[in-house]
Image (cartoon, rainbow, N blue to C red; front, side, top):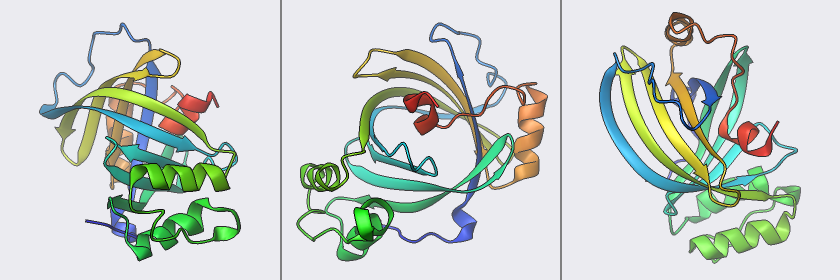
Length: 198
């Protein structure tokens, strides 16, 4: 199901920290485990737009998240676009307005396939930096807070890491979860910031 734009109810507060790849002590072991997924996401990053996080999720779905608020150390993100291929005209217009120079809409042909979309975006916007990230993600839940413990590998560089993350619509619940693990002083870095080294 394609979605754009999203309502404020879809906004989620997030907190993500990065650890060495060989860390084995999962601090979420006491939470309820809700699933595991393995996939490779391709990120399209614009260094001058750290408020946008764009990716091909598993090579099948195109997603743009937009940072809409900050209450340090936490960030609030909203899903601006989430759609499977082929992308419809409304989605192509939304993608163009967020990512293209002069906010020009993508053509219907551009949205037909992954290859067409990537060609259109990278041709029009040379500033894109792409990273393919393979993830083995374990998902957990405690109350209203979703947690994840994920092993990642950046395919272009071979860099490996472990990331611990939390998200919820409830800022107070997120604060309590992070404070409970005593990690609120660890820098919160979303995938884009970590991949670009910012």
